[in-house]
Length: 351
Ligand code: MN
Image (cartoon, rainbow, N blue to C red; front, side, top):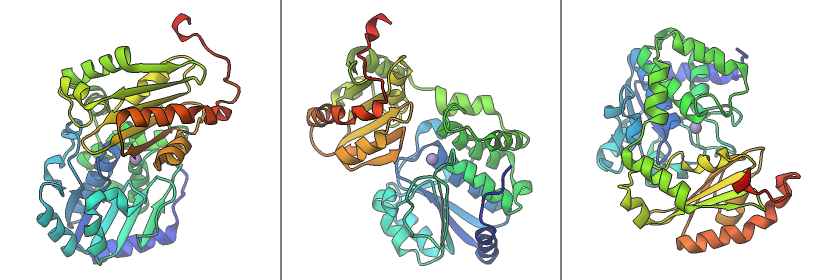
């Protein structure tokens, strides 16, 4: 495995960890497998060093991650604001996982701001804000969990890694890479996978629980969205799905139910990008995916002020679902230059 971490930063972190006793771990709002996997993974390792550790998250984590060891011990800001504030106030160290800007904590940002202790950032998103004392930022890395494994290994803590810790870390790698199908070109990832499996992780179970399993309603909502709501744009090799609140409620929508839906249109041969617009309680949630480096992050940024990775991005739109759809449809022709020659109109229904 290539040594890619700055040894001075590792030394600094090692020294810091020696000095502190209470540690708070936190991650972004609407946490996913990588956010929860990395914070809980760190928690288990730091606890085996005798530290007092709390994972504090801005809002609820999806039920699909409830199998993770330590899941029930996380403090949720939207449910216990005062308790979470106390944890941040009393922390000697805050480790921030899987986000690049304090605003990604949503309303819980105020707690991060008031914590006067040192902060460490462990993240793989572009353009990290300089809010932490030690910053480990690797936008090319598959996941924050992969980065966490590397840091822990460089700290000499691989031996402290229990099956529980390894299960959490592997979960983030599996969810962010869609079970090693995207962002996983580096051979190192498979070496890390091997090291985690040697700790006794049940990979098949993790894949089933974190990626595949869903409720009856969630599956029916996905089927409905694809068969009734998918608009294919043959001249632009793209697709848009819009779901309003009533449609989501009809299928007993729960947070996380439409998690993988935006990916489904990209399974169509010839499709380059996919947008999914969902009416939420206070805004329209925009998510976008693409193949062949079509820059959906650029579209999300320029049209909606959002952002993300080249092939996986998102935004929030304040206005109606129809306004959001219209804005997007009007803007898409401007980005056809990025289709790189894919300009012939495809007849999707007959291929
Ligand atoms: Mn991530």
